[in-house]
Length: 63
Image (cartoon, rainbow, N blue to C red):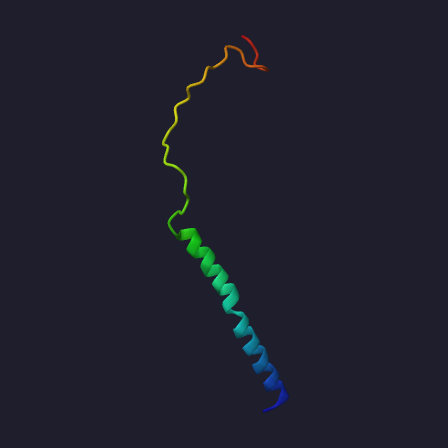
C-alpha cells in the first residue's frame, strides 16, 4: 500500500470516528426539543386581578 493511500485511509478513519459525537449531540437536542414537557410548575390556571387601580398614574396627562 502506498503512503498516500495509507494517509487517506487514516484520515477517513479519523473522520468516521469523530462523526458520532456531533450526531449524538444533535439527536439529544432534537429529542429534548420534541419530548413532552417535564416542567414541574403548579397548575394554577388564570389568576384574576384583585388590586386597586389608582385614579391618576404618575406621568399620565390629565384631560
